[in-house]
Image 1 (cartoon, one colour):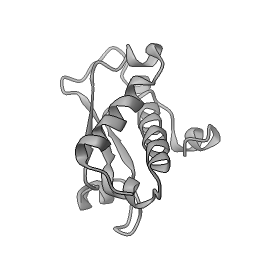
Image 2 (cartoon, one colour):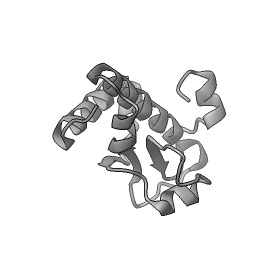
Image 3 (tube, one colour):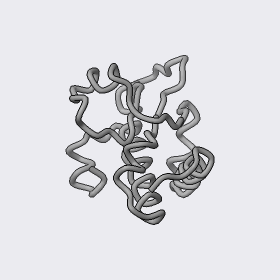
Image 4 (cartoon, rainbow, N blue to C red):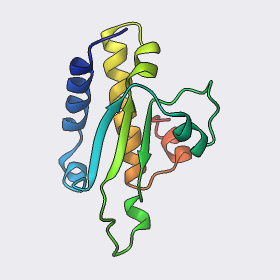
Length: 123
């Protein structure tokens, strides 16, 4: 299911806006962007092969690891449009995958591991 970048970004914005305020209020140092797909460097840095699928990526220092230090540059969450589109047959599936991916990457920002996210159904 392919959509324009504008439509995809609108769905991402809606997914972010649907997060509880208690989380949104702590995300002032997070930029959320959309890219076509993960770069080969991003894949390699995360121990993934070129044939692996990556829907989103959190790049930064999780809140649980910061202590009193706040990095000067914003943390970045990237949502990858092409793999999400390729895994979705309908607009509903596309929207659901975007919401799941946004929640998954935001959870990494808050310090949750992939194992913990799998247990919560956000893996």
